[in-house]
Image 1 (cartoon, rainbow, N blue to C red):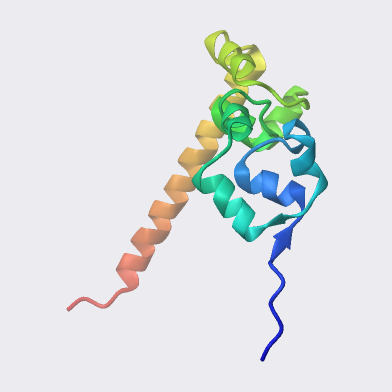
Image 2: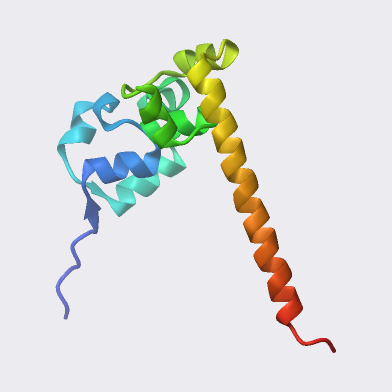
Length: 133
């Protein structure tokens, strides 16, 4: 007989990242102990009230803030946005965007357009290399 397998666990910071929440805003019991894969799946399938609240209203981690604002994480850093923002703060920024947000969103749009152009160009070259039947 083989011994029972120990459950796979992860650090609370890793679990928070997978859940899309800011670790420091999570309850103390979540922050204090490792999270098993089964616990993470349970949180994803039927999130408790605190998780639903954090996802809706924040504070949100930088990755989520950047995505909601339509900028890169580097753009947030260039603008000096280092603190986590709540959903209402993000909404306020979107409703009356400061100059840095307008510039960073334009930069992000240009980067996306360039990436699409390169992808299309590579696809076109690949299509030319395929033998015709």
